[in-house]
Length: 285
Image (cartoon, rainbow, N blue to C red):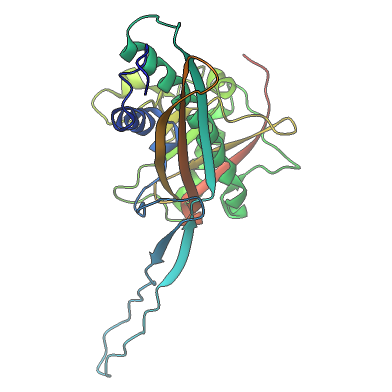
């Protein structure tokens, strides 16, 4: 590559930097598991998921012990999401240091990837079972400062009734900034500052009804309704890979071409560990 302001760009180094950025700050990556993440090379790759069969417990008697044949089920996590970024860096753009400006560009690429990634995972609300839904599309819940706590208690109760909340499975709930403005007025909301020594997920603003609260601007209104998503990390499995990042010299200008390919997929593997609340879009408090 011809010597220029960004000739210090080394794909392997910046690939590692971008991977570190993506793994640390994405909201929904705090709410999924990556138990089945394997070697992902191409869009359409599949990660095999084996779900163990249920084991029954019987009362001991004088009769012979009968053995149940266990038949685990198999399903595929398909890596069907393919996102890329591609930008041109002109040689005359010699601002700051090479490392500083490249890091800024990669952070912008990371932000764009996270928005698409979060939106995709949040769209899985369509797979929440009816029994784990508070409100409905035809009768959405209206939130205000005085009722918001009771509605979030109902949401948490859905997870408890489906046996999703057990030892080691800490519930989470994702809201948008508008709903956050109401939640902050609830005396029952425990802010991150007051949670003290109790561990919260990275980026959580606090806890409500036993659930860690995270905020995402990607929880957009659909037909004047929001779908507030809650669950445990057992509900959704996720796999991703920054498949490639490379630099090319532009043949038509004094510029470098930087491009990257990011692959990912998400799947609901335990629907009972997922719940949602259908909320009418309130105006800002």
